[in-house]
Structures are given as C-alpha cells and as structure tokens.
Amino acid sequence: MVMEVGTMQNINLIRFSELYNWSVSHLLGQDFEYNKNFPLVKIGKFLTKNNNVINLDNDTIYKRVTVSGNNGGVRLRNTEVGKNIGTKRQFIVESGQFILSKIDARNGAMGLVPEDLEGAIVTNDFPTYDVDTKAILPQFLLLITTTKKFIEFAQTCSSGTTNRQRIDLKKFLDVQIPLPPLNDADAIKQGLPTDITQEKLVAEYNQKIKEAEQAKQNAIEKEAEIETYLYKELGIQKAEKKEAKKGLHFVRFKDMERWDSEYLLTELIELNSDFPLVSYNNLFIDLYNGIPARHYSTEGVRFLKVADIRPNHISNHNIKHINSYKKTDLITENTLLITRKGTVGNSIFIKDNNKYTASSEVFIIKLDTQKVNGDYLSIINNSEFVQNQYREKNTGTIMPSISQNKLKEIKIPLPKSLEKQNDIVEKVSLIERTAKNYLDLSETLKTNAIKDFENIIFKTAVE
Image (cartoon, rainbow, N blue to C red; front, side, top):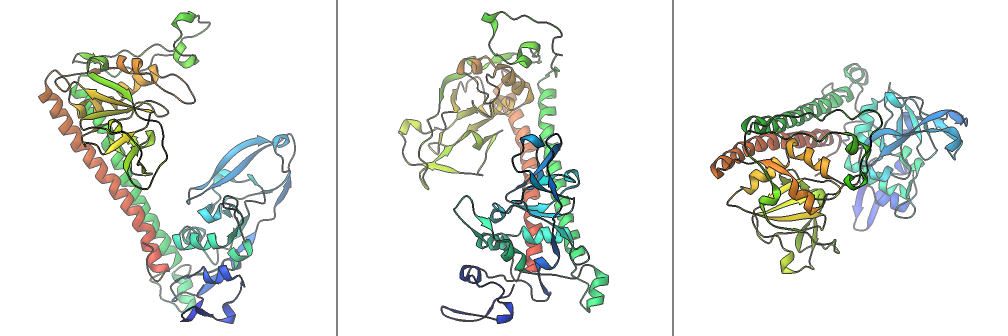
C-alpha cells in the first residue's frame, strides 16, 4: 500500500483512490515501502473466507489447531472429544489454507495449514482462508506476511487491551501487497520481465533455508564427534540402560530415594573407563548455591539463569542484569557452574572475574585445580557418561532437581596427568569451535534468506 504522495511537516497527503480505511492510526501508522515495479493487490482479492461450519458431536474426537507467534508455524494443539469442547460451532480446516490468530496476529501468528491438520477444527478466533493459487503462491503470501514490516502493520490493525488485542480483519484484508508475476509464463502474459517471479523468489528462499538446515546438521554431527572422541580417548565402555524389571516388584521404603517407577524398576547403569573414576566430592573445594531471583535492571552485573547455562557456553538469548547484590555474590574467576533445577546438569567453567552472579538454582563450585582442569571437568560433565548419572540421581519428574550430596556422588574418568586433561580440552575445543562456526553459518543463511527477499519486495531491507 503506497500512501504518501507528499509531506508538509505534519501534513500527510493521501490519494483518495487509496483511502480504503479512515482510521487515523491506521493511516499514519503505516509506511509500506513496497517495490513499485510490481502491481499492488489487496490481500482480500485472493483470499476467500472458509465457512465450512461444523456443529461438534459429543462422541467424536477432534484435532484442534493452534498458531504460534513469531512465525512459529501452525501445529496440533491437542485432540479432544466433542463433549469436552465448550464452543460447539466451529470450522473445519483444509491443508494449504491461510490461517491467522485474531489475538496474536500482531505477534506474527499466521501460517499455512499443514497436511497433517487436514480436517482439524478451529474457532472463529482462528479465521482460515482459501488461497487463489492462480494469483499467488501460498508460500509467497506466507513470506510476505512474516516479514517485520508486515508484522508492524498487523500491530496497527489490532485494538483492545495489551494482552487481548484482536486484529481488524477488514483492515487486514484491505492491505495491498506487491504481487510479482506468478511464473515466467505469467510475466510474459503481463508484459513484465521474467527475472523476478513468485516462483523464483520462493525457490531462492527455500534454497537458502535448505543450506541453513544443512549447516545446522553439520553442527550436530560435529558436536557428536565430541562424545565419540571422549569415549575413545578415555576408554569409556558405553553401557546401555538395562531393561526394566518385569512383574511384581517390591522395594523397601527405607531404600526409596525417588518415587517414579522408571527409576525403581530400572537397573543402574554401570560405569567403566580405562582411567580411575573419581567422585565430585574429591574434586570440589567449595560448593554452594547462587542467589534468589532479584528485581532485574537494564544495567549492572549479568544475572545467569538456568536457561542461560548451556553445555560449555552461556546463551545470550534473554540477558538479565541486577544492580542490587553483595560483593560475595559475584562469581570469581576459575569457577564451575552446574544447573541444579529444571534443566539439571548443564555446566560451564567461568574464567572471567566478577562479571556474573548466578541464580539460586545454579551450583557455584570451586575446584581442586591440582587435580582437575576446570574445562576438562565441564566437558566431561556435559557428556552422556555423566548426564546418565544425573538422570539416575535427580528427584522430581515435573521439575527435576539434584541435591548437593547427590551431585558429589557423580563420578568421572580422570587422567592423573593435568597435561593429558589439557590435551583433551584443546582437542574438544577445536571441535566445538568448528560446530559453532556451522551454527553461525546456519543463522546467517536464515537471516539472509528473509533479508534478500525483503530487499526485493521492499525499497530497502529491514535491518
């Protein structure tokens, strides 16, 4: 939708022919910089509302649909018998239809119905539309509607309280998008160049995504090499979990450390290595928990949550800071962190001084550096050899956790020579760097896929 003809300070001029919505916020809140080489077509021109209504039967089991925000896709919400579903009048969806969430469209909750949800049901809060594939490719429509510019538009089309803003479908269907020719034949028919078509744009995008997925797979395979290398270098015999005991089984109450049947009925995994198995109790000098959650601030010292601590690295996905803490709360250099609740057993060896604080759901550990290299311990801690031990010693099924005493019981194969440990760290670090390079490449390819698409559709790419 091209609105601006000229600007006089605070006066915006709009062609009457393009004035299809009289809302001031709608008019002033949009600045669609679409490529003017393509005709602009209203979305409603090639979308037809799905009115396949069904009145639910109490005894029939139905598949229900949900649409994830941030362009997370369309997926199965659950299956439910009709008598347990409150809204009896719903709509049957078909694969390939365009669907959006009235409430979360402003957060990018739009997509295409996949084949496995053919015949599923949705309420009126999830309007679905048949796509005129003679005018637009469904994936081209999906690409347009998942761009940052379009999401910003969807936000201006939504009204209501902060968490329950519903999109105005008329505004949504009235927006105009640039529509390149469908394919070469369509371009020739319209007298347009054949270098840019919907088919080619979608194919180029898919190729970049395919390359991104391959880079991600390369990273996964490279990370798997770490496990293979450790098992070979340390002479670890990979023990499979023994089959669960059959029939009636009695357990003395005093021997019950956990209540779940999987733990009670499964034999413990045997630990074997060419090197001595040493318990954490013999390697820890000090062990204590982090600090309780505080009020977060925009500045101060970094506060590490459980979700931040990944195997041998710190995630920067959702960074939090605190500015109220004691000096003793600061994590000093050469400290091992191990997550103790929720996600149990992830570790990272911290080499920075006074740069972090950590959640009370994280163990903070000082090591006997005469016996063990901190990086070595973190590497082996994140291996399947040790992670199996965490699963055996955890308590709780919904929110697993491990106590300090149980943590101290965990055993690792430990070469007595620090030089040997250092050598292992160096080789694993090389593999980790290669894996990270693949992951970075994957993210770059995904970013470039949508950015290159936006470069063509919009006047300038969205940064």
